Length: 119
Image (cartoon, rainbow, N blue to C red):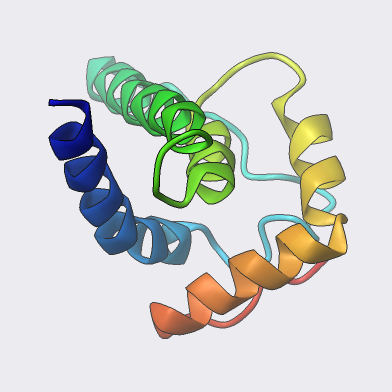
């Protein structure tokens, strides 16, 4: 059962990771004024909650994939980028300035046909 679940998670993350990374604007890490969370009505709250839940699932799946086949580190990073929590911006900047992480994210964005992140 663990093998089947691991295989499903592996395939899903292979398909979703480049797409989800492509949704992040290329200038997300270089803007002086980062993309702020704006909640103007109930629909925005629903979007933030869904995005955070998807991020949490990716984060947890990434932790599982550290010991099973899959893109564990990339899934953890993508989950962190999607979630909303205090100190998120500082953590994101620290992670994107780590060269191996930046190279992996750039490679995945190329797979989605998107330009690399600017830092």
